[in-house]
Length: 449
Image (cartoon, rainbow, N blue to C red; front, side):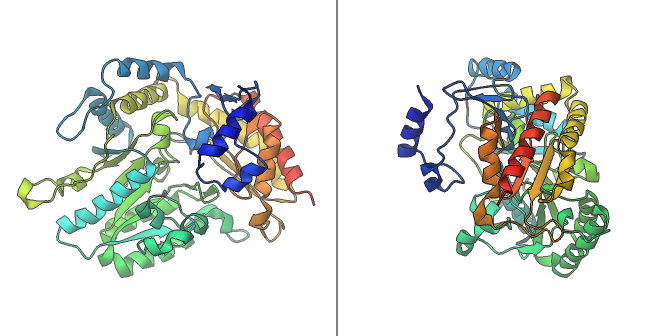
């Protein structure tokens, strides 16, 4: 099959996510036949380094033999069974392993299908917890500006990126928005930590004044990924945990994109030395293989729902594929690789190479920021370096980087004017340096005119 043949069939039948389909009149979708390690290959033998881990999910490369073997073994034993009233070994094993590796105090696992569904479950759990404790007035949530937590209506309401939610505003619940500690906005001479503490003052005031009506604060620790890979200092969440305890408000940590090693530790919350009341996990949980998510929470939350049936305090939330055995088997294989291969330490070495590969871009006249947290690195193009005035969004400068990268064996899908590296952990130092060179070339091309 030729690339063009599949693209023609695709355009007739497939509606792609997060895409203006009219774009495909000038640049069609890239057809992929196979994947191996960091590489994706089309039908004509062209290869691309998957520098964005196929939407931030792939940790250990495509067609990983250890994960493939886990799937094959599980398929031969049990593909799926209802988790209401039944159980199976993979879901019990995975729950025990997650409780072991997540922050101390998270002791119960509730499964869903994807990241948005995990956020939805956590929102409902928090509200229902307070209702079961006789506090139905606690029904509001607090988010951060520039945040993103998914596309289902509850998760979308907790976001603050207009590109994603403005159209659907009439359908969404209202939330309270606190200013983000995003270090990109700090004043000259101000440290990331100082700025985070200054921004936290507003959050503190919100909680002090409105805690009687607030269920939970929902945040994405350390990196606001869909918000342009904007990053902040971990002290913000240290203070937030203290304040939530002080005012009787839950803390929901959305670690769907930032968990499983993306920020330099297994979970981003570790860098703030906190335990959230709810930790939402997905994406890297199954290393890019299958949809699976989980809300890991505390015995205190669990106990609020534990009662005689007729009290109607149970959490009656479900998904058909909750706790799917094949997904759980993949997640267990993923955790085995973390345990056996010294992944976090190796990532620290690779992250240093990532930093070195683009260090020179800090002086580029159209680069407003080069930022990094672990295995996530972002470069933000600007029209004016001194003022950080952005390029108009309609000029789509990031797409110019993307198009150039495809000619240089790299997949660098942008977030507006932000190009970023979030590669699988099996990438080599040489491949990282190649991506740094391609990114540099792409930015030089993108800012011409």
